[in-house]
Length: 455
Image (cartoon, rainbow, N blue to C red; front, side, top):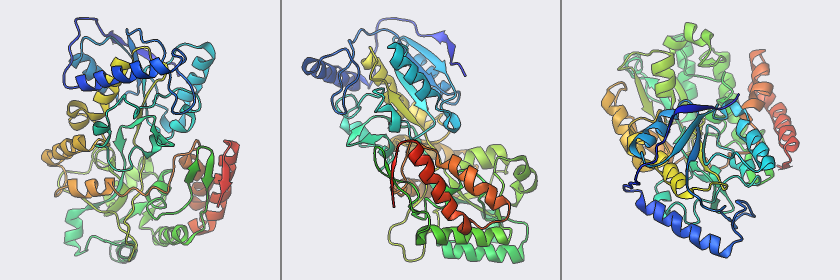
């Protein structure tokens, strides 16, 4: 698709700066220092050798998807002195690779790069650093005191050899969503372990047939279940290196759990976003492991689950595991272009859009990766009165427990699962039996993208 520029243009007026003045001054300082010792003007270079282009100021071009468009518009309203072109594009949704394709074109023509970009993908750095597109943020552009407030590990997808090349917008840590009134009515306890979860699913199959404790029908199912189980299917060990082992004990015991619940029909095999699920299963959900955005996107918007039913609990863990772990399904990133001729304003926008309570705390649809904004966001969710009980504690805890062994390669695990495991599962094969096929597919995808594969 072709990006469509927003009709609203920033107007140049006398400059005003609020509490982000420190960020701008820091950016100016690093630009002066780096330009003085670099050759200047290239905008590219080896990692750690950032050489900004000549800083001429002027309009900054910001690419956002439709969901983040209100953020850019709010920034423009609050910062009328900053001249902006706000451009909407698909946000690389579903791994479209639109951004990578366009950057490749801009690199050939030596023009056209946006100053700041939002991507719905967490793996953009896997190509963007090599392409010379992203500016290093922790080399003086964004203060360390600010960066320290991101949730632990949340910026790992943005980091290469200790250098930070993007900022995480939101998290999608997995928790256990459940119907609190039904759990009370039927005398069930919220499971704390995966063993208890499976046992409860077996009880539900007998005592309340038709009700569900989860679904394995989405392409992101491995990110909910296998990631949280510490299945080593996707361990990125270097810029172009990955370890793949889908048949370990951690993988097989979670796959076996899913197979057991699929067989007794308490685990669905259709997508939560399918018309089939909406028609036949949306009102039959007793429990559902899923990311933080399930509360709003799935239960409120898709299922239209009434207020006062849905509660949140920590994701179950294997009994005896001393290190709780959860998965992650999505979240997005913001990238600052190394080619920007106005790094002061571009950095100011980047910092504001990822940290501001005005957007992240009050308007953002997903759980903010910036911890202070997350507190505001959670308080707003609780105040709305939709959920049963306080959702803050389980979500805040899970934000610190995303297992770091599942990486962000240049290939899509969701696409691989959808092409390999989902068809076999829906045709009646067990997930355990499909694990070797999954491994072979990951290896093939990784190698086709230039990765060295180990086990």
